[in-house]
Amino acid sequence: MAEGMFYNVTGGYIEGIVRGYRNALLTQQNYGNLVQCETIDDIKLQLGPSYGDFLAALPPNPSTSALAEKAMDKLVAEFRYLQANAVGSLSKFMDYLTYAYMIDNVALLITGTLHERDTRELLERCHPLGWFETMPALCVATNIEELYNSVLIETPLAAYFKGSLSHQDLDELNIEIVRNTLYKNYLEDFYKFVTEDAELKWTPTAGVMAEVLEFEADRRSINITINSFGTELGKPERRKLYPSFGRLYPEGILMLSRAEDLEGVRIAVDGVSDYRTMLDQTGNSGGGGLGNQSGGIGGDDGKSLEDLFYQKEMEISKLAFTYQFTHAVVYAWVKLREQEIRNITWISECIAQNQKDRIGNYISVF
Image (cartoon, rainbow, N blue to C red):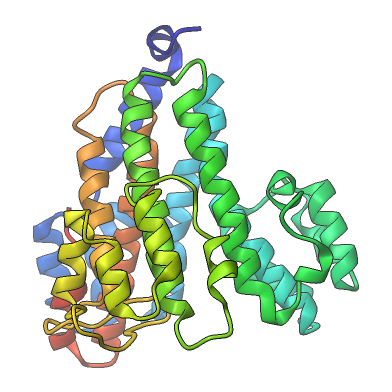
């Protein structure tokens, strides 16, 4: 079925709902009201029109984590509704969106198994969008080899393990390599799907999602490189973690694989103005230090490289809504809502700690 016909049947219905969700995101005025709050209860009251049903069960003056959890519940409920009504390529597209969260959940379960953590605690910490029916069965595994075999049989991630990872790789020292290997395989598979699937090829979905996924591939490659400095991860192993597509591929990726310091990263991305500007803004041209665990490097205004990556991601997500008849709006809406939840959490934490002066630099409004 051609994508145009598909949209006439159900895609237009789903897209219309998503555009409604997007219009319901918090506005500049909403954020202005939030930053004037004095307590978490005040924040809860301000969020009432958008999140009321999900916040109703919260106790007075709830914790910031409880507030964030309820905000995430709203995103999950809306996503599951869309997923239940999606068919054809849109259904498969939404499955792909969940795989990234599944990778994080599986990595968490591997780490928990290594440390013999409580199964219930592990499941509670898993991201709800990455939940799959057989996930509790993974926690029955008593050792890494059993867990590895269960993953290959019971999860949608099996294809990303096969040929890339063995059960010997699933140890504490290699967990981040495992995570990044899975993400590499996942991104390459997702990119192939949106650009080659018979329903999506040559459509707005293919064009918009290609840009989205190329940015994500480049971001991961840059962060992997920066985070590898001063570690035991060698250049050959680092090179294997880079996705084989993106605006940096292949020349920039080759240069990243050879980079030995931040200046080497700067040279590798010099051909892509967006990334070059980000590194310049974080004072990267002559060296510096890592700003956060995600690979960010702090600039004069307090923003890290990862903060600027998030900002770019929001720009791409907003632009996705300027196109018609595209699955990309679902992806973009999820990213925008996740940023909204990060904003709410950050504002809440600053207010709870009586540090409202810290709010401004880290809020992305869309």
